[in-house]
Image 1 (tube, rainbow, N blue to C red):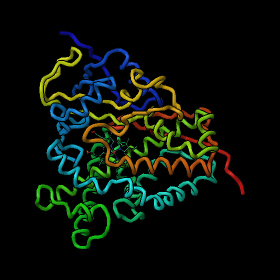
Image 2: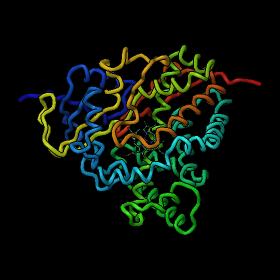
Image 3: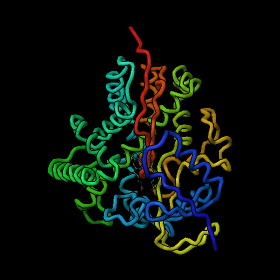
Image 4: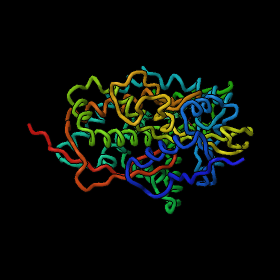
Length: 392
Ligand code: HEM
């Protein structure tokens, strides 16, 4: 039986910002499922209901591989690449570290970091939002969260960039950076074993999955995931949010004039600019919408396709802070739903509040053309902004 084959390859060269969301919208309306030959081949489910069902069905959708660009990984990040029942055990252990109360307890420290970064920029009247703010801020929060000295920010930024944003030609740089991150986490784990404090790593050292002590290898896979999960996502979400606000005067003015709207704005921007492109490895053969999928095949479940599906969201391409019943799944769905969502929401809210307090009006300079690229996460490469510095 024939099925749709579409050369969908979002992993190539940078392209104008917004291109990928438009492409995903178009593909969704063409068909509910298709095969792409890119990145060793993968299926794509395009509509909210099917995507949600796939995330919930962990028996036939394994998380042993979660990115179509790496279909047979040699690593197993904890907990995101574990399947039940192992995943359930880890999730139970990790839950207390990611409660709303634990995130709220970090608010003052997060706000301080955020204000420091904005104060360093506000009087300049221009910046590249991606490099000068969006990547630095979640990295500073991560260091705080992990109990690492904020003095290591520059080092971390460098490694993070080499791992997540280097093009394929820079493979050696990526491996080297990953090695440095691993060495730092190994050192941190050894240090906290000797001298526990009240941070995440010290808490994780006390874990007893299945009644036996946690191993250093497991702690390392956990730290690595926290490093990769919380930095790029928040940076990308902030960049798309400010790309939107810089181009939509009414939305920007409303946030500046009425900060009480910010929590709703955060949710709507998460929906409209969803950016994670998770995938699953099928454990059984199945025919879905006429597509003959086989055990071992990868299926991509793009969150932007779900969250901009007109079958669920009225006028989905419009950002509407007054949208009611915004049941988006920007943080995923099913048992792997983002553990860091409370922290992420807090980071996004605080950034919108503090930025607009200091820089209420800004725009993209004439002639600037922000670009985007995709790996497991869609992100902007640059976002030049200019504004008139406030005086007095
Ligand atoms: C806007 C920011 C963020 C977005 C959009 C986001 C999105 C996601 C998504 C979609 C997943 C599910 C992946 C899958 O099912 O394969 C996930 C999982 C996860 N995220 Fe986030 N995330 C964000 C921020 C964070 C932060 C700040 C942290 C923590 C410090 C974090 C920690 C995690 C963890 C630990 C998991 C794995 C959960 C599990 O497998 O049970 N995330 N995130």
